[in-house]
Image (cartoon, rainbow, N blue to C red; front, side, top):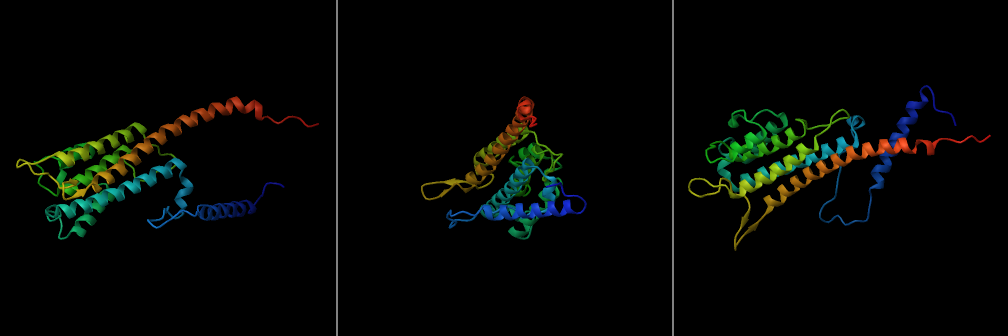
Length: 250
């Protein structure tokens, strides 16, 4: 069969793409139990045609980490209602304001223009007088985004430095430790978070931060492995080329 020509090729390509998407949609079906939730991916978008597998992994991790940080912000506001009252009329309004600031990637004004780890250090000092929850979560998000080269979406020409991602994971570990241990002059926690007493066990903050750290570590490892496999694949291609040559049949 000859190669499609003219208008046949685009139609053939579209048909193949439609078939691939249909198979992807049905091929993921399983008999696994879904009583506690169901895994879902993003719906197909045209931008995916400009993204590699690595880009998709980085994008998925960035979205999931943003959702985790907003969940942490909500939990912190519920345990520290005095904080949202510093910046908004309601907890919901404070969350919306924080989300908009993260999405726009503009500096958080109460942090005096400080970004990433500098902002994180400032938000966790007893001297900080602003909305500490918003400052802390914004600084965590800005640290993660900075480690991804300052981007939240990735395409073919984009790449991330695995060491920067790894460093961001360690920074999240440090931020969690400081959140759990740092106190003001009266000996009170700067922010109420995890609670472990004879009457109450609340480690939800620990678990959510653990998810963020795990995603960052996985991306760092995946990116390192991806670059290594690309180099190995190149060498394998050179070595295997003579073995893959067609032999004369007449």
